[in-house]
Length: 396
Ligand SMILES: *[C@@H]1O[C@H](CO)[C@@H](O)[C@H](O)[C@H]1NC(C)=O
Ligand SMILES: *[C@@H]1O[C@H](CO)[C@@H](O)[C@H](O)[C@H]1NC(C)=O
Ligand SMILES: *[C@@H]1O[C@H](CO)[C@@H](O)[C@H](O)[C@H]1NC(C)=O
Ligand SMILES: *[C@@H]1O[C@H](CO)[C@@H](O)[C@H](O)[C@H]1NC(C)=O
Image (cartoon, rainbow, N blue to C red):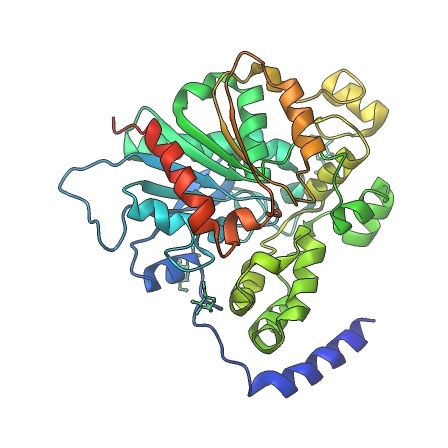
């Protein structure tokens, strides 16, 4: 199977190599791409309480609005979704992508990552070659990565509050993080969640659907304990050579991984998208997401009856206590999202405290990744996000 794939790829590569025009952003990392577009961008290393070293990028202003001496702008923490990275906020052109738009709109932009993606591959003493390094799911991202990134920005900016924009798992990280650590709510001014992922029973992503049928042993046999679908040489090869000339091939790879029909995306940009996505996570994280497909609960990692009793003192595992969230949130959902469906977000709302006024906007034609990459997001979504953040911005 692998041999056939290699032969097929080489044939296609040779055929298209001369025809393809390579996008300059294709092999550049986030700092290089952001700077190439004229924005300042520095790289920071955040250390979590349990020792993961995760990179964060800082974009203090746009090309046309430099900082005045001693000026502190309101800060915004951007948190990407599952198998994604901070690059996602800078995926398209500067007028289209939220990371650039917020810098242009006068925000101090901080784009965080999580353990186990391409910008989260270090630990103070564990090697990424060890099983212990990969022993995490989104639960640890909520408990460790989310507070570490937040505290880092607060400390760097000396602000009392920052705002938050999360997509998909990055939305779930905030919801779970605030549920488990409700004292963190005071650290945020505005919170905007784009297709936040929590309950997963009513989803129809092909990949999750298949993964959910595997038991733990089968899962580990197929994917190993460590990293799940890291950026592989063959995905890079597809991105560099084939996508430029034949975007429909890329559509299929993306479709399987993120559950996206890229009808709203820029086909010409596809090589850049596919070269930066998927950005990697642990097999255990994908197992945790798949577990939620067969339970109508938004719950902690399921270790089996015996393991749950040892770990949590109860079986099934506890749900994340979303009723503890008292901070108002602006929610945006896509009507065609196969991962975060209406049935799933209604489950979440049934759990949230009815005393808090959350704002909910549904964009009917949007799928999961359209929230970030759709060609018209700069017209129909991003201006609303900027307005939400400006309502409560803090500069002290
Ligand atoms: C991007 O690549 C440059 C050049 O190799 C390197 O100096 C920089 O640290 C990289 N940035 C990140 C975020 O890895
Ligand atoms: C992962 O963590 C759990 C809980 O702390 C522990 O029981 C298990 O042995 C760990 N597995 C690995 C491979 O480190
Ligand atoms: C806070 O920032 C200062 C520099 O501004 C740094 O020396 C210190 O280590 C930081 N503390 C934490 C907890 O990150
Ligand atoms: C689509 O992507 C190409 C390649 O990066 C870029 O040159 C073009 O400006 C993009 N078009 C739009 C409308 O974003």
